[in-house]
Structures are given as structure tokens and as C-alpha cells.
Image 1 (cartoon, rainbow, N blue to C red):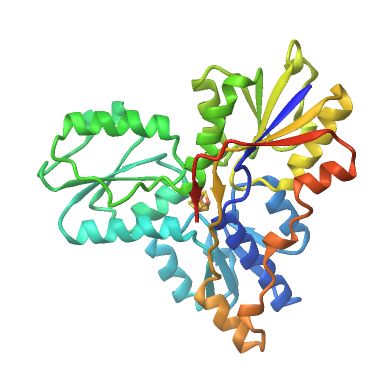
Image 2 (image 1 turned 90 degrees about the vertical axis):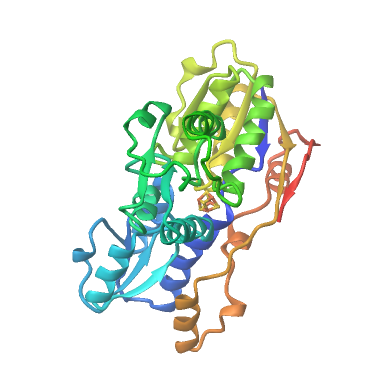
Length: 353
Ligand code: SF4
């Protein structure tokens, strides 16, 4: 069997940062309870691994004892949650991805300027709930073109759209086109709100999936960007399956399949991809081809509150451990050690850095 590995795949800069935050706290405050509001990132394995190290994931700040430490997840929170944390005298470490914060800031700015905001996204997704909370009176959520008829618009010349960071670019294009048709004066955000990681992972799948009989996406079902990768694949006509790990593989998926494309959502750890490759090679034999479509060199610094906490405890934040360097051997080395035939095809069309 030919296994094609999409590049980029897996962890994005926001996920590296958010995981690093919790990891740093575990080292910095051994024995102290660490609470995380919502799943730190939407991946079952990441959450279970932290849970195994004593981290408590909570859905309501009332579960956190007064005066304790709480981490806000990568998806961001509304001002009401930040306020509640203050009232409970919690030390809040905000691991919100800076690209989500960018959308929050746009929402605040446009609402202050008197705009109504059409937020394209999934109504109940934590990121959308957080962004909406910045200006609840000014924001209406648009999940599909069918929602347009229900919008209440006061002044069509004072209207802007923003988007959730992890949408399918295919779906977003359809919705935005319909919004522009309905409201020709609709203003656009200064730059795309769909983040670089979402865009690049989708680009890679769109480019490679036509060469595959099956696409396997490693990621959790509540991971928006992982689910979107399966949709992009199906949009180009290749059946896709979303799996948390190799234990979910089903033999019948592989009837008549000669080429499999493997990718991973932005919150899926790379070791799960390695396990999946090993499983498929053991079942079917074959070779691995890495296809480089987009190069990413983005990195986000730790939040200021965490850096301060580190200084207070005598740890120099500049010498911090970067989880990226810690996340196992590069795929080439890993394949070489296991004598799995492999090659890399450089089809790079751009870089984000
Ligand atoms: S998927 Fe995008 S918005 Fe979400 S954490 Fe990663 S970089 Fe940030």
C-alpha cells in the first residue's frame, strides 16, 4: 500500500503554545491543582494525557476553588468568563491562540465603530461563544446561507463579517458569497480570519486527496479543523474517515484501496500518526511518501501572565522548554529506524512564517 503523508499536518503554533502552557505549569507548580477551563485543545489524547498528570478540566468556573490557578483554553473565552475569574480571585493564565484573540479584537473594534457583525461560524463552538461574548448586541452568527433570511439588519452600510478561525475555506466561500449578494456594502475583515494552519492543512488535502483512494484524518470529533479536513477531502471526491487513533481502523475501509492519504488536525499529536503508519505497514506492507505542500515556521510566545509567574518563581521564561523540540523524532528518522521505505516529494507552493 502507498501511504502519502500530507505536510503540513498536526500541531499548529497555537496548539503548541497552549499545550506548552499546561506543561510549564505542571513543572512550575508541582503538587498545586491546575484547572483548565474547557479542553485545552480539542483532542481526546492530549486531554487524557494531561488528566493522567493530575490536570482538572472543568466546564464551569464555580468548580475552581477561590484563589486557585485556571488556564483558559486555546479557543478563547468571553469577557464574562474573565470577569467571573476575577471575582473568584483566580490566577488566570490565558492560553487563547493569538489568532483567536485577533478575531476578538476585530469584533471589539467594529462594535465600537457602530458596525453590526456577522460572525460566520458554528453557533455552539467555544471559539464562537467567546468571540460573541465580546459584543453580544452587535454580533449575529451565520452558520449557513439559510441563516441570512433571519438576520436583523439596521443599516446595511454598517455591516462587517468575521469568521471562526477553523472553518472549511470551501464552506466559508459559499457563505461569504451569499452574504455579499444579500448585502453588497458588506465590509471584509482586514485579513482572513481563517487561520494559516487551517488553511494550509486544507490546501494540502485538497491538493493530494485526488491521488488517494481513502483519506485518514487523525483528530477528535469535536475538533472543528479535523472534521473540516474530512469535508474538504469528500468535496474533491475521496472518501475520508476521522479517527482518534489507529484502534478505530476498520478492515472493510481498505477493500480495493491502494493509496491512503494520512493527515492530522491541528490538535492531533504526531505520535498517533506514527502509530497509524506502523499499523498500516504491518497490515498491508508498502511505502511512505511525504508530500510537502506548505512550509510553516510560525511560533507563538507564552502568555505574559505565565512568564511573570515563572519569573516570580525564579524560572527564566526565555530558557523555557519548548514542547516542539520534545515531541518525538522527525518522521524521516523514525521511518529510517524502522526500515520503512520512504521518500519526500517537495511540492511546496508557499510558506507561512
Ligand atoms: S487552529 Fe489556528 S486558530 Fe486554532 S489554535 Fe491553531 S493556529 Fe490558532
